[in-house]
Amino acid sequence: MSNGALDPRSLSARVRRGVADRVRIDTRTLAVFRVVVGLLIVADLLLRSRNFSFYYTNDGAVPQSLAQAMSSEGAISIYHYTTDPTVIAGLFVLQGLIAVQLIVGYKTRIATILSFLLVVSLDHHNPLVLSYADTLFRLLLFWAIFLPLGERWSIDAIHADREPRAGIASVASALILAQMVVMYIVNGYHKAQDELWTSGEATPLIMGLHDTTFFLAPYLREFQTLLQIGGLTWFYMLIFSWLLFVLRGRLRMALVGMFVASHASFIVTVRIGAFPYVAIAGVMLFLQAQFWDDLKAIARFLELDLAGLEARRERLVRFARRVPDVRIGGERQRRARELGYNAALGIVVLSIVLFVALSTVPFGGLADEETVVEEQIEDRAQQLSIDQPDWSVFAPTPRTTDSYYVFPAQTADGEVVDVYNGQASVSYDRPYEGSQLQEQYGSYRERFYMNSVRRGGIQGTNDADEYLADYICASWEEEHGTELTHVNMYQVVESVDMDTVSDPEDRDRDVRPVSAHGCGDNEPTEIQPPDF
Image (cartoon, rainbow, N blue to C red; front, side, top):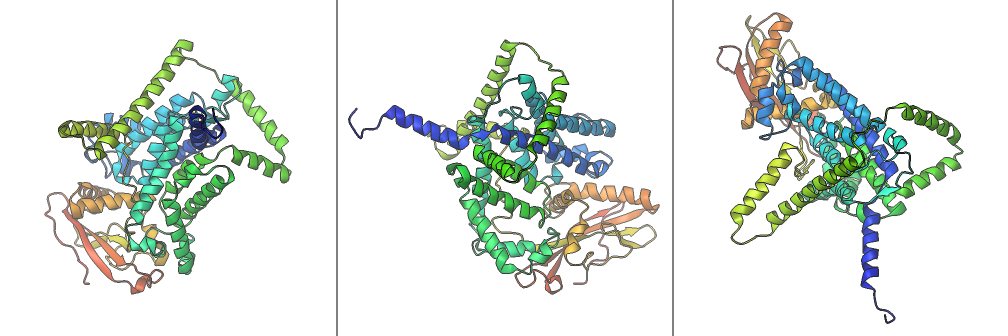
């Protein structure tokens, strides 16, 4: 070969190495991801259990018939096979136990698959309370099925009795990393369509949503310029999130740290449930060996007692060795399972390629066939809840209205009460002062549920408002010994601008009827409507 000529084989090898280095996930990072995923499942089950009867049994406001009507056709859910509250509670417990199995890394692949199926089942059991956090969690958990989550720091790793792999560079690792970048870029694209984001005003306005923000948000509202800088920084981080793939070493660590810090700021300002935690778990997958090497160096610099940690690790190893290593089949069966996993991943990748190709490239004379294939792929994805949403979180136009609900109801004795806020008289003034407005919701999922109720009443997209009214009529009589004859639902909306972020008294208000219902055989009627 002449001087200066490039060897195609050498160039190809360098490209492959470069790609592999950028999609490689450190197995220690995978172990942390596995533990966090298991903990998130357990935490979610405990939080959902607070409203178990109301949201997840036929005695509540979301019976199985409504859940099935709101889910995609053929949606997979083991909960759809029973309406017995005891069995449903048992499935909650089962899902929690399998999550613990995932945390300790015992038969990790099986635990991951079962956890994914149970998470999907529970989401389909009540789709009215879901948010982007649930969507992202399902997708990350799905891609994790094809990754060796139990390679380190697990019972499986102890049973394997071999040196664990340092990192994993595969199609699956590329896909789970791409999931985070796709979410960020698409959301950034949507945000770029509105001047509120490109000017930086969106973040102060969001901090002015008293029905969503809490904790540190009231203090940060006073620093609008700082919030604008923070909002613009977040916007450009989303637009340039593809750098998470390009960068390596400490530069990548720095960018990951910026994303983690941003999501952590959401935890203490915006009441959006699990989304920041799920996003942190996902973006931390970009941390490679450099992070762990630096962590060790910091521990040595601080002279931390690593010997004590090693002693505890040895005790855990001895415990793990006592756990039975149950193996189904021999080497041939193990290879068959691996082949099955690879085949499943291949089908998924092929489906993605086909869907994208058929959606973007016209094939003359094959329009009908293209549509059928696209629909079949999309239907299967929806049944498993792994279809990609539009990722329009607070985008393209952020919400600039605060809101709260008032439910005037009339009793058989002729009294009028507010059954939503539990007040003996009806008032359309704020039920909570200032930033405490978010306390109208017992949990963050209640806010998403009320959005579903509102859409059902105003837009007629579901029957959630009717089921809620029936539940209120029945439960009120049981709890208060007084029969209700009528229930109305109103949403009070406040316009938020840069001048009223902290001063709700100066906002323009509007009252929007959601729906009206008659309990029993009573015809719907208007009850004490607002006078403004």
